[in-house]
Amino acid sequence: DAVVLARCLAERESVPQALADYEASRRPRAMRVLKMSRRADKGGQLEGRLACGLRNAIVRLMPASAQRRQLRPIVDVEL
Image (cartoon, rainbow, N blue to C red):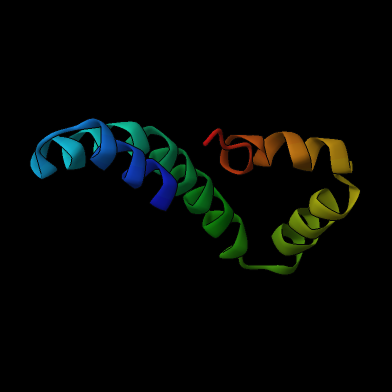
């Protein structure tokens, strides 16, 4: 975030325009992170032995490649 903000401030003459550019560039990624977080939270809030057991089995059996693919939108960041 700091790198993007510094770039926006360097490229614009006014601080308000730089902040608007920063927000516009960061909002899509922030929304993806928020959506992923909400999905994870729903899974973490499951109740009952069957639901929790199923969730735990899915997480345990998920291949590392699938986990990386799910996280790619938030960890692969171009500066």
